[in-house]
Length: 211
Length: 111
Image 1 (tube, each protein chain N blue to C red):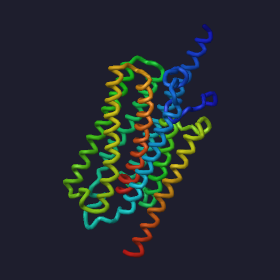
Image 2 (image 1 turned 180 degrees about the horizontal axis):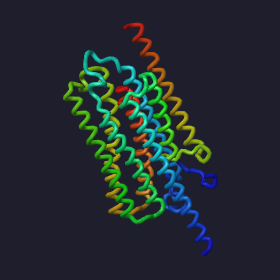
Image 3 (image 1 turned 120 degrees about the vertical axis):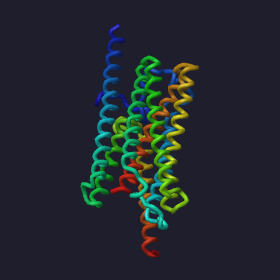
């Protein structure tokens, strides 16, 4: 491990093999640093919603609570789906870095996208079943806080999928050029970051609520 | 020619190292997910013990994700990236702990 080169920026580093991503006005490290700043500020938004949720946890106004509304099996499946999609995105990053065939990169991206879509499917199903049990966002302060936090993460996943579709389109039209490479590096940071937010969600909300 | 072969070999070694890092991250994250879900599903501990265990496993898993998936590796990292993570962590701690402290105190005094 000691022989490993220094890191230019968070996430996978393409190294000296992809010079076109470096020959820009700004350096590659600076371009990704900007996105890293955005992610950390996004983490602060999520953190405050977590704090709001914790403060509102017992403000139920006689409405249903976590034991009645959450489903541990569904949360478990969602966790495995998102975690696996983080791993498959890692494989896509390696396919990009080591110049594997374009089909391999596209295949890993497609698998990641399908896992993300399945995750969303399960999540929407969860929300609908909560509505059926009388647990919509208008029921209590606790449920307002829940529906501010968890669907916001789902929206992030949705935008990650749209972004992935756009990059796949770019690859088909322009090939794997500089902009596609930088886009994939940013999307990788975004996708792995969303998985970290999900770890906080399943731990504090689902497991904490059902403990 | 030998220079090219050396470069190819060192690239191969880096590839193997990075692949191992993703595989380790995936394996560890799965393990750190399975244990707390199992503990809660079968209510192995008291409620207080469960909260502590969930918090500990979540923290460990977040560190694994940062290390293996986001490649945050303190000795190799540029100081800006690392300081930003640490500063954001500090901000999050102040804001979350402060919010919960103040609102819990308010609830206790008015409820």
